[in-house]
Image (tube, rainbow, N blue to C red; front, side, top):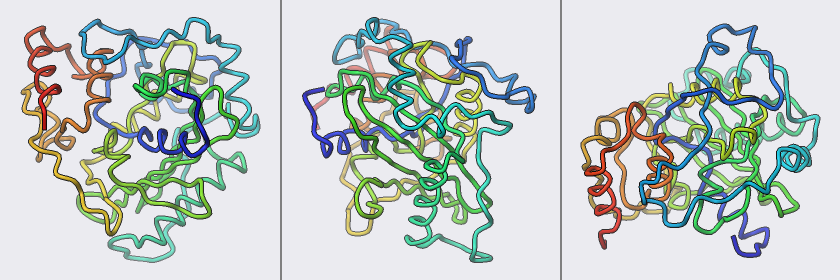
Length: 322
């Protein structure tokens, strides 16, 4: 990434908040510091996230970022600047339970209620009451603009009406941390996903910039390297929580008209999940960044790799002019 200002970091990172195009959790990853998965047998038995290694599809617009000079010790030191009281938590559940919603029988959260949830989880994180996974993320690190380690602290919260996520993020050379949040309104069918930047005086809802990576909600956790994640069992448990969410809709802020993104991806290997009536919403060329990354690094499709012919078909679709 070019030399960045604080506002530039916020614009860039708001495009890469958590979110979900699908998930695959495969081979073991060595944690830097374990949590307490023994208290939750189901979580501790989860397959751990495999290290990110390019499969050489040729889909990447730039070569994979070389992080060989970014040491484990640097990762721990830089991640810890967020406050050691806030990270490396022992846990029995990957998700923090929020108090019951104040309005009984709610059908459709108001914008103010959504904002309240976002402010609440930020406060819980700042107080040290969240259970965050800390990592250097694959997707944000491989962005065409951000060519340096991107540090993340990701935490999940929920009650009967909402799933709430918090991302606390910065580049390895930036001083301040940025806060971003997702609220999934579970009181409507299908659930509605709100995205917001929490770095100004209030909560700023985001639309098209977040949709580029988050058409179907939070993304699974994909560390950029095996030793750049604080707690592998926690990462696996949190990613399973993300993967188990129901099909949801992306909510564009009031007054922001969703752009015409053209025709969706029709590759059969992708539309088995990413379709109007699929487990996840359709994919468009606007989603090219996560598509290129997740396919090249072998995370998508979740159960097999695309054949050379399918890769050629996908590349041709990505390179079509609008």
